[in-house]
Image (cartoon, rainbow, N blue to C red; front, side, top):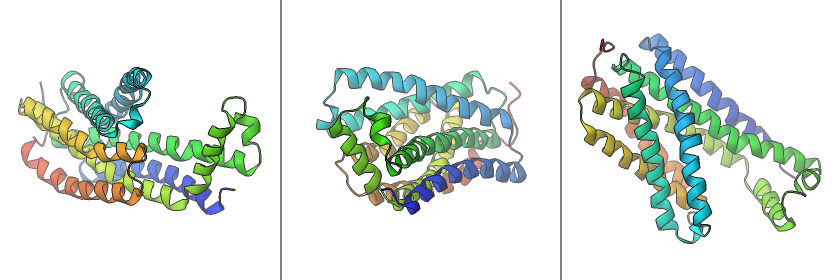
Length: 261
C-alpha cells in the first residue's frame, strides 16, 4: 500500500509547480512589468526542444545502445550534453528568430519563467501525476488487472516496490528542486540572451557546458549509481542560490527597454 502521506505529497508537488509558475508571473509582472510573449515562447520552446526533438534523439540512441546503464560515465556525458545543446541552442534560436523585439532584461526574465515554469509543471505531472494514478490502482488492488497484459510479472513487482518505497520525502524534495531549477532556467536564459545582445557566441557554448554540468549528476541517480537523492537536491540548491545572484547581476549587461530592431 502507498501511504496517504505519500499520496498527499504527490498532490503537493503538482500543485506547487503550478502555483510556482503563476506566482513568478504575478511577482515579476508587479515588480518589473514583464511581457507575456516571451513567457509563451519560452514555454512552447521548452516543450518543442526537450519533449519532442531531444526525445527523438534519445529514442534513437537508447534503441542502438540498450545497455547504456552499464556505462554511466559515457551515458552521463551524452545525456548531460544533449540536454545542454537542445535547451541552450533552443533558447538562442528563439531569441534570434522570434524575439527580436524582446531582448531586454525583463524579457530575459519572462522567457526564463516560461521555460522553467512549464518544465516544473510537466516534470511534476510525469513524476508525481503518473505515479499517483498507479498508486491509486495499487491501493485498490487493480494494478495487475490494469497493467498485467502490458508488463511481465517481474516488471510489475519492481513497479510496486518503487511505488511503495518512495515515500513523501521523495516528492517534497522534488518540489524543492523544482523551485531552485526555475531560477537556474531564468539565469541560463539571461546568459544566452546576453550572448545574443553582445554577439558573443562563446556565451552560448558556456551555457551549454554549465547546463551539462548541472544535469550530469542526475544521470547517475537515474541509473542507480547515486543512491542518495539528497546529494542531487543539495547540488541543485547550491546552483540555484548562485543563480539568484547572477539574475541580479545580469541587469548590468542587458538593456532596460526592448530592442526596436
